[in-house]
Length: 400
Ligand code: PMP
Image (cartoon, rainbow, N blue to C red; front, side):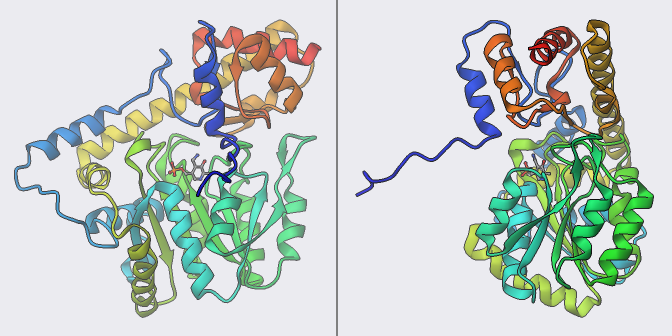
């Protein structure tokens, strides 16, 4: 009965790793997927995560019962504090509802379904370009997806004018997806002054801000600094949504730990909204997994573990920044034509190189360097030993 089913295309991001794994070359480099690697090119389990897991194992009172539909209460409270700030008035006034979800993706999807059922506008504006999963998640949730200009290929920076024009002509009440920091795939973020401008425009048109926060701590190395744009919007007392992921900043990728917070006008609305979020989650996966959320809660509630986390997080962010410098210098040493300062200026895990899909295909074929066809490379997948290979590949692709 299923013989008519046609093969679906590989996911454009995860497909890069599939192709990489099939390549028999002994020297190859995967810069496709946004996962952190050490200087030795290995995945990293943070020490603070290992410590938390040991504490959990040794705690004999712990059981494997189902969590409530909304997840682990401590985890939810602490996640809201992490993004909104410990003394956020919205939290103090109980105007925030937070539900544990399946990492960032699951948080986006739950929010999408909630908005499709309970919000008067079904249009969501996403930046052009954005993470490839965004349009799929929101379309399947029942929202109508439109884009706003974000990136300027000529400056390899923000198209601020285009962004303001597009949001300025969006219908009143439209939902606007914003990357909280370290925009994926461009690595280009607004300055705090530009954020303030965006906030004023959005509030004046009653546009609903929806932050995707997948890289808190990864952009600057500081959890608070990276939460600034979100806190700016919460400080004005208006509504907003935030999807948080602990995949990158705690390295909990496969544990699927994240949270959706919705900031509302009153405690009463927050509690009603939470009741409806439960009706979205229950028929989808009933309740979230316990292990990853317990790790996060253990770290966030212990002053020493939290402090250790910030040190390890900063070390990851700093290594990425070093890779930017090394790649930039390697291209300069080769005299590669073009202005490569955007490698230094862009923020977070990714560099949007400006290489086109033919150049990317050439680099993969001739140099076994793998990346998404839009020219995005994960700086977190690079290490000192591999910088020369990447620089040679880019140089040869540009000189063709
Ligand atoms: N949003 C953005 C912008 C991302 O880059 C990612 C991860 N690549 C996610 C959300 C979701 O990741 P996860 O579901 O693993 O938390």
